[in-house]
Every structure is written in structure tokens, then in C-alpha cells.
Image (cartoon, rainbow, N blue to C red; front, side):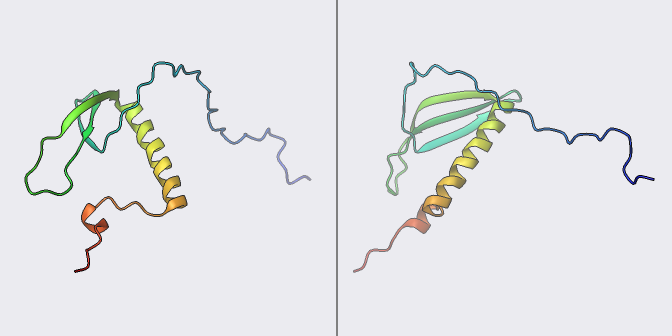
Length: 110
């Protein structure tokens, strides 16, 4: 008597294969931003980018928004995962990124 079943073994579910999509980068325009604002609708996520030129002054300066990206929430979720992965790799290589400016300021010695 065999302890193994003669029934076919169910194979483990396979992860979906990543498909390589060809991309055309000939019209890419690069912009720098150190500020973003995230808003949205029930269908889309809207991310506005701009440059914050304030260095810590007491009078708030208006931040000029210069770029807007609108994505659906499926793309937003994939983007969030890709950004999180990229930031994690950066922090593993270079150390923790402190996003609180007050914690990054080094007091000047008198």
C-alpha cells in the first residue's frame, strides 16, 4: 500500500509574470519639485508639484505649482508601491531620510 495518492497533485498558484512594455522616452520633460499637493475625486488622484523657495522665513511665500499629474487609483497604488520600494532601497544604501525639517537642522554654535 502506498502512502502517496494516485490523484494528480495540484500545482501551487504561480505569480503573474511581469510583462515588459516598450516605452518611448523621446518626449520626456524633466522638472524638479520639492513640494507636492495631493487631491482627488472619486475616480482620480491629482498630484500637483511645485518649488518651495522658503528657507524657514516667518512670512509664508506663495508656492507656485508648475506640474500636475492625474492618475486613476489603480495606477496611484502601483506608483505608491514603486516609490516606497525606491525609497526603501535608498535608505538601505544611504540611511534614514528624515522628513521633519526641524529634526534635520543643526544648531549653530555661538
